[in-house]
Length: 345
Image (cartoon, rainbow, N blue to C red):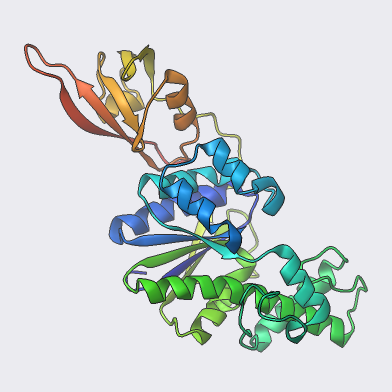
Protein backbone atom coordinates (compact mmCIF):
# COMPACT_ATOMS: atom_id res chain seq x y z
CA UNK A 1 0.00 0.00 0.00
CA UNK A 2 3.04 2.27 0.26
CA UNK A 3 2.72 3.51 -3.33
CA UNK A 4 -1.06 3.41 -3.68
CA UNK A 5 -3.00 6.45 -4.84
CA UNK A 6 -6.19 5.16 -3.22
CA UNK A 7 -6.89 2.49 -0.62
CA UNK A 8 -10.47 1.20 -0.39
CA UNK A 9 -11.60 -0.25 2.95
CA UNK A 10 -14.71 -2.36 2.51
CA UNK A 11 -17.16 -2.70 5.37
CA UNK A 12 -20.35 -4.24 6.60
CA UNK A 13 -22.13 -1.09 7.62
CA UNK A 14 -23.53 -2.42 10.90
CA UNK A 15 -20.38 -4.23 12.06
CA UNK A 16 -18.62 -2.61 15.01
CA UNK A 17 -15.61 -4.86 14.40
CA UNK A 18 -15.31 -3.68 10.81
CA UNK A 19 -15.28 -0.05 11.91
CA UNK A 20 -12.68 -0.71 14.59
CA UNK A 21 -10.54 -2.37 11.94
CA UNK A 22 -11.02 0.59 9.59
CA UNK A 23 -9.84 3.02 12.24
CA UNK A 24 -6.78 0.94 13.01
CA UNK A 25 -5.86 0.67 9.33
CA UNK A 26 -6.50 4.39 8.86
CA UNK A 27 -4.19 5.21 11.77
CA UNK A 28 -1.45 2.98 10.35
CA UNK A 29 -1.77 4.48 6.88
CA UNK A 30 -1.71 7.98 8.33
CA UNK A 31 1.46 7.18 10.27
CA UNK A 32 3.14 6.30 6.97
CA UNK A 33 1.38 8.78 4.70
CA UNK A 34 0.37 11.85 6.76
CA UNK A 35 -0.98 13.59 3.65
CA UNK A 36 -4.25 11.70 3.52
CA UNK A 37 -7.91 12.33 2.70
CA UNK A 38 -10.86 10.26 3.89
CA UNK A 39 -13.56 9.47 1.32
CA UNK A 40 -16.94 8.52 2.78
CA UNK A 41 -19.80 6.72 1.07
CA UNK A 42 -22.15 7.92 3.82
CA UNK A 43 -22.49 11.48 2.55
CA UNK A 44 -23.90 12.87 -0.71
CA UNK A 45 -21.88 15.56 -2.46
CA UNK A 46 -24.13 18.44 -1.42
CA UNK A 47 -23.02 17.92 2.19
CA UNK A 48 -19.34 18.62 1.47
CA UNK A 49 -19.48 22.05 3.19
CA UNK A 50 -20.71 20.37 6.38
CA UNK A 51 -17.78 17.95 6.31
CA UNK A 52 -15.42 20.88 5.80
CA UNK A 53 -16.89 22.69 8.80
CA UNK A 54 -16.53 19.57 10.94
CA UNK A 55 -12.86 19.07 10.07
CA UNK A 56 -12.20 22.76 10.72
CA UNK A 57 -13.63 22.39 14.23
CA UNK A 58 -16.59 24.69 13.68
CA UNK A 59 -19.25 22.13 14.65
CA UNK A 60 -19.96 20.12 17.76
CA UNK A 61 -20.65 16.43 17.34
CA UNK A 62 -24.39 16.97 17.74
CA UNK A 63 -24.37 19.85 15.24
CA UNK A 64 -22.42 17.76 12.76
CA UNK A 65 -24.87 14.86 12.93
CA UNK A 66 -27.82 17.23 12.59
CA UNK A 67 -26.44 19.28 9.71
CA UNK A 68 -25.19 16.21 7.87
CA UNK A 69 -28.73 14.77 8.09
CA UNK A 70 -27.20 11.54 9.33
CA UNK A 71 -30.43 9.72 10.09
CA UNK A 72 -31.91 10.73 6.76
CA UNK A 73 -29.00 10.12 4.38
CA UNK A 74 -27.41 7.08 6.06
CA UNK A 75 -29.29 5.79 9.09
CA UNK A 76 -26.76 3.35 10.56
CA UNK A 77 -25.67 3.86 14.16
CA UNK A 78 -23.54 7.00 14.15
CA UNK A 79 -21.49 5.68 17.07
CA UNK A 80 -19.92 3.17 14.70
CA UNK A 81 -18.53 5.95 12.50
CA UNK A 82 -17.81 8.79 14.91
CA UNK A 83 -14.30 7.54 15.82
CA UNK A 84 -13.35 7.80 12.13
CA UNK A 85 -14.76 11.31 11.93
CA UNK A 86 -12.97 12.38 15.11
CA UNK A 87 -9.71 10.92 13.83
CA UNK A 88 -10.05 12.98 10.66
CA UNK A 89 -10.78 16.15 12.62
CA UNK A 90 -8.01 15.54 15.15
CA UNK A 91 -5.50 15.22 12.31
CA UNK A 92 -7.13 17.83 10.03
CA UNK A 93 -7.63 15.28 7.26
CA UNK A 94 -10.02 16.33 4.48
CA UNK A 95 -13.26 14.36 4.51
CA UNK A 96 -14.80 13.79 1.08
CA UNK A 97 -18.52 13.30 0.44
CA UNK A 98 -18.36 10.54 -2.18
CA UNK A 99 -22.00 9.77 -2.81
CA UNK A 100 -24.94 11.19 -4.73
CA UNK A 101 -28.52 11.33 -3.52
CA UNK A 102 -30.16 7.92 -3.33
CA UNK A 103 -32.96 9.17 -5.52
CA UNK A 104 -30.53 9.83 -8.37
CA UNK A 105 -29.32 6.22 -8.33
CA UNK A 106 -32.94 5.07 -8.25
CA UNK A 107 -33.77 7.29 -11.25
CA UNK A 108 -30.90 5.78 -13.23
CA UNK A 109 -32.20 2.34 -12.29
CA UNK A 110 -35.73 3.13 -13.42
CA UNK A 111 -35.10 5.26 -16.49
CA UNK A 112 -31.51 4.61 -17.56
CA UNK A 113 -28.45 6.85 -17.71
CA UNK A 114 -29.35 8.54 -21.00
CA UNK A 115 -32.77 9.64 -19.72
CA UNK A 116 -31.18 12.00 -17.17
CA UNK A 117 -29.40 15.21 -18.09
CA UNK A 118 -26.13 16.23 -16.47
CA UNK A 119 -27.83 18.27 -13.75
CA UNK A 120 -30.17 15.44 -12.80
CA UNK A 121 -27.15 13.10 -12.65
CA UNK A 122 -25.32 15.54 -10.33
CA UNK A 123 -22.62 15.79 -12.99
CA UNK A 124 -21.69 12.11 -12.93
CA UNK A 125 -20.29 10.90 -16.24
CA UNK A 126 -21.03 7.73 -18.15
CA UNK A 127 -19.71 4.68 -16.27
CA UNK A 128 -17.25 2.26 -17.77
CA UNK A 129 -18.93 -1.00 -18.77
CA UNK A 130 -18.86 -3.40 -15.79
CA UNK A 131 -16.69 -6.51 -16.25
CA UNK A 132 -18.52 -9.83 -16.80
CA UNK A 133 -17.72 -11.15 -13.32
CA UNK A 134 -19.27 -8.04 -11.74
CA UNK A 135 -22.36 -8.39 -13.90
CA UNK A 136 -22.72 -11.99 -12.77
CA UNK A 137 -22.38 -11.01 -9.12
CA UNK A 138 -24.96 -8.23 -9.49
CA UNK A 139 -27.39 -10.63 -11.15
CA UNK A 140 -27.08 -12.90 -8.12
CA UNK A 141 -27.64 -9.93 -5.82
CA UNK A 142 -30.77 -8.90 -7.69
CA UNK A 143 -32.19 -12.41 -7.62
CA UNK A 144 -31.50 -12.87 -3.91
CA UNK A 145 -32.65 -9.39 -2.84
CA UNK A 146 -35.48 -8.39 -5.14
CA UNK A 147 -37.92 -5.65 -4.33
CA UNK A 148 -39.11 -2.22 -5.37
CA UNK A 149 -37.18 -0.45 -2.61
CA UNK A 150 -33.68 -1.36 -3.71
CA UNK A 151 -31.23 1.24 -4.99
CA UNK A 152 -31.97 0.51 -8.60
CA UNK A 153 -35.72 0.24 -8.32
CA UNK A 154 -35.56 -3.16 -9.95
CA UNK A 155 -38.43 -5.56 -10.47
CA UNK A 156 -39.47 -7.83 -7.60
CA UNK A 157 -39.67 -10.90 -9.86
CA UNK A 158 -37.43 -13.77 -8.64
CA UNK A 159 -35.89 -14.08 -12.10
CA UNK A 160 -35.57 -10.54 -13.51
CA UNK A 161 -36.20 -9.94 -17.16
CA UNK A 162 -33.19 -8.76 -19.18
CA UNK A 163 -34.27 -5.11 -19.17
CA UNK A 164 -34.70 -5.06 -15.39
CA UNK A 165 -31.30 -6.67 -14.98
CA UNK A 166 -29.65 -4.10 -17.26
CA UNK A 167 -31.25 -1.24 -15.34
CA UNK A 168 -30.04 -2.67 -12.05
CA UNK A 169 -26.49 -3.18 -13.33
CA UNK A 170 -26.52 0.30 -14.85
CA UNK A 171 -27.56 1.86 -11.56
CA UNK A 172 -24.85 0.05 -9.62
CA UNK A 173 -22.20 1.07 -12.16
CA UNK A 174 -23.44 4.68 -11.94
CA UNK A 175 -23.19 4.53 -8.14
CA UNK A 176 -19.62 3.21 -8.35
CA UNK A 177 -18.75 5.88 -10.91
CA UNK A 178 -20.08 8.69 -8.74
CA UNK A 179 -17.80 7.75 -5.85
CA UNK A 180 -14.83 7.07 -8.10
CA UNK A 181 -15.13 10.52 -9.67
CA UNK A 182 -14.80 12.28 -6.31
CA UNK A 183 -11.72 10.22 -5.45
CA UNK A 184 -10.17 10.88 -8.87
CA UNK A 185 -10.89 14.61 -8.61
CA UNK A 186 -9.16 14.76 -5.23
CA UNK A 187 -6.12 12.97 -6.67
CA UNK A 188 -6.05 15.41 -9.58
CA UNK A 189 -5.98 18.33 -7.13
CA UNK A 190 -3.37 16.79 -4.84
CA UNK A 191 -1.60 13.85 -6.50
CA UNK A 192 0.61 13.20 -3.47
CA UNK A 193 -2.29 12.89 -1.01
CA UNK A 194 -3.46 9.32 -0.40
CA UNK A 195 -7.23 8.86 -0.51
CA UNK A 196 -8.69 6.24 1.83
CA UNK A 197 -12.23 5.24 0.88
CA UNK A 198 -14.74 3.97 3.46
CA UNK A 199 -17.21 1.95 1.39
CA UNK A 200 -19.56 -0.99 1.52
CA UNK A 201 -17.74 -4.22 0.75
CA UNK A 202 -19.74 -4.79 -2.43
CA UNK A 203 -18.12 -1.71 -3.98
CA UNK A 204 -14.65 -3.11 -3.20
CA UNK A 205 -14.68 -6.89 -3.73
CA UNK A 206 -12.61 -8.45 -6.52
CA UNK A 207 -11.40 -5.13 -7.90
CA UNK A 208 -14.79 -4.42 -9.45
CA UNK A 209 -17.08 -1.57 -8.49
CA UNK A 210 -15.27 1.62 -7.53
CA UNK A 211 -11.79 0.31 -8.39
CA UNK A 212 -12.90 -0.56 -11.93
CA UNK A 213 -14.28 2.94 -12.44
CA UNK A 214 -11.15 4.50 -10.95
CA UNK A 215 -8.97 2.66 -13.44
CA UNK A 216 -11.15 3.98 -16.24
CA UNK A 217 -10.54 7.47 -14.85
CA UNK A 218 -6.78 6.97 -14.96
CA UNK A 219 -6.14 5.97 -11.34
CA UNK A 220 -4.10 2.78 -11.50
CA UNK A 221 -2.46 2.29 -8.09
CA UNK A 222 -5.39 1.10 -5.99
CA UNK A 223 -5.37 -1.02 -2.85
CA UNK A 224 -8.43 -2.97 -1.68
CA UNK A 225 -8.74 -4.33 1.87
CA UNK A 226 -11.56 -6.34 3.42
CA UNK A 227 -12.33 -8.23 6.62
CA UNK A 228 -13.21 -11.88 7.11
CA UNK A 229 -14.98 -13.01 10.25
CA UNK A 230 -13.37 -15.75 12.29
CA UNK A 231 -15.36 -18.96 11.78
CA UNK A 232 -16.79 -17.81 8.45
CA UNK A 233 -16.58 -20.37 5.65
CA UNK A 234 -13.55 -19.97 3.42
CA UNK A 235 -15.26 -21.50 0.39
CA UNK A 236 -16.11 -18.06 -0.98
CA UNK A 237 -12.51 -16.85 -0.79
CA UNK A 238 -10.85 -16.26 -4.12
CA UNK A 239 -7.48 -14.99 -5.24
CA UNK A 240 -8.96 -11.73 -6.52
CA UNK A 241 -11.17 -10.92 -3.51
CA UNK A 242 -8.87 -8.18 -2.15
CA UNK A 243 -5.23 -7.19 -1.84
CA UNK A 244 -5.40 -7.86 1.88
CA UNK A 245 -7.84 -9.76 4.07
CA UNK A 246 -8.01 -9.18 7.82
CA UNK A 247 -9.42 -11.76 10.21
CA UNK A 248 -11.76 -10.24 12.79
CA UNK A 249 -13.64 -11.69 15.74
CA UNK A 250 -17.40 -12.17 15.69
CA UNK A 251 -19.42 -9.39 17.31
CA UNK A 252 -19.13 -9.17 21.07
CA UNK A 253 -20.14 -6.82 23.85
CA UNK A 254 -17.11 -4.81 24.92
CA UNK A 255 -17.03 -2.97 28.23
CA UNK A 256 -16.40 0.77 27.80
CA UNK A 257 -12.68 1.55 28.14
CA UNK A 258 -11.46 3.27 31.29
CA UNK A 259 -8.35 5.32 31.98
CA UNK A 260 -8.13 4.45 35.66
CA UNK A 261 -8.22 7.97 37.10
CA UNK A 262 -10.18 10.09 39.55
CA UNK A 263 -10.95 13.55 38.16
CA UNK A 264 -11.99 16.96 39.40
CA UNK A 265 -13.16 19.92 37.30
CA UNK A 266 -10.76 22.81 36.84
CA UNK A 267 -11.14 26.18 35.17
CA UNK A 268 -8.50 25.16 32.61
CA UNK A 269 -9.49 21.53 32.06
CA UNK A 270 -9.57 18.39 34.21
CA UNK A 271 -7.38 17.82 37.27
CA UNK A 272 -6.30 14.28 38.17
CA UNK A 273 -6.93 13.50 41.82
CA UNK A 274 -5.65 9.92 41.60
CA UNK A 275 -4.12 7.52 39.08
CA UNK A 276 -4.65 3.79 39.57
CA UNK A 277 -1.43 1.74 39.42
CA UNK A 278 -1.31 -0.52 36.38
CA UNK A 279 -4.03 1.46 34.57
CA UNK A 280 -3.93 2.87 31.05
CA UNK A 281 -3.32 6.30 32.55
CA UNK A 282 -0.37 5.06 34.60
CA UNK A 283 1.11 3.29 31.57
CA UNK A 284 0.88 6.57 29.63
CA UNK A 285 2.78 8.39 32.38
CA UNK A 286 -0.07 10.43 33.84
CA UNK A 287 0.35 11.43 37.49
CA UNK A 288 -1.77 12.64 40.35
CA UNK A 289 -2.05 16.42 40.16
CA UNK A 290 -1.69 16.60 36.37
CA UNK A 291 -3.99 19.06 34.63
CA UNK A 292 -5.33 17.79 31.29
CA UNK A 293 -6.12 20.80 29.12
CA UNK A 294 -6.70 19.16 25.72
CA UNK A 295 -7.80 15.75 24.47
CA UNK A 296 -7.51 14.72 20.82
CA UNK A 297 -6.43 18.25 19.96
CA UNK A 298 -9.53 19.91 21.42
CA UNK A 299 -9.88 21.93 24.65
CA UNK A 300 -11.17 19.81 27.52
CA UNK A 301 -13.99 21.42 29.49
CA UNK A 302 -15.17 18.84 32.01
CA UNK A 303 -14.65 15.33 33.40
CA UNK A 304 -17.79 14.22 31.56
CA UNK A 305 -16.28 15.35 28.27
CA UNK A 306 -13.17 13.24 28.88
CA UNK A 307 -15.25 10.23 29.91
CA UNK A 308 -17.34 10.48 26.76
CA UNK A 309 -14.24 10.74 24.58
CA UNK A 310 -12.60 7.74 26.25
CA UNK A 311 -15.72 5.61 25.86
CA UNK A 312 -15.75 6.35 22.12
CA UNK A 313 -12.17 5.19 21.75
CA UNK A 314 -11.96 1.89 19.81
CA UNK A 315 -9.50 -0.84 20.84
CA UNK A 316 -6.02 -0.54 19.42
CA UNK A 317 -6.08 3.24 18.97
CA UNK A 318 -4.32 6.16 20.66
CA UNK A 319 -5.65 9.23 22.46
CA UNK A 320 -3.28 12.23 22.64
CA UNK A 321 -3.57 14.48 25.70
CA UNK A 322 -2.02 17.85 26.50
CA UNK A 323 -1.01 18.00 30.16
CA UNK A 324 0.31 20.71 32.47
CA UNK A 325 2.48 19.31 35.26
CA UNK A 326 3.73 21.34 38.18
CA UNK A 327 7.27 20.78 39.37
CA UNK A 328 8.83 21.66 42.70
CA UNK A 329 9.62 25.35 42.57
CA UNK A 330 9.18 25.50 38.78
CA UNK A 331 6.54 26.88 36.45
CA UNK A 332 4.07 24.27 35.12
CA UNK A 333 5.52 22.16 32.33
CA UNK A 334 3.47 21.43 29.18
CA UNK A 335 3.62 17.77 28.14
CA UNK A 336 2.17 15.67 25.34
CA UNK A 337 0.95 12.30 26.64
CA UNK A 338 -0.48 9.49 24.52
CA UNK A 339 -2.85 6.91 26.02
CA UNK A 340 -2.68 3.63 24.11
CA UNK A 341 -5.82 1.52 24.20
CA UNK A 342 -5.11 -2.21 23.87
CA UNK A 343 -6.45 -4.10 20.90
CA UNK A 344 -9.53 -6.20 21.56
CA UNK A 345 -8.92 -9.84 22.23
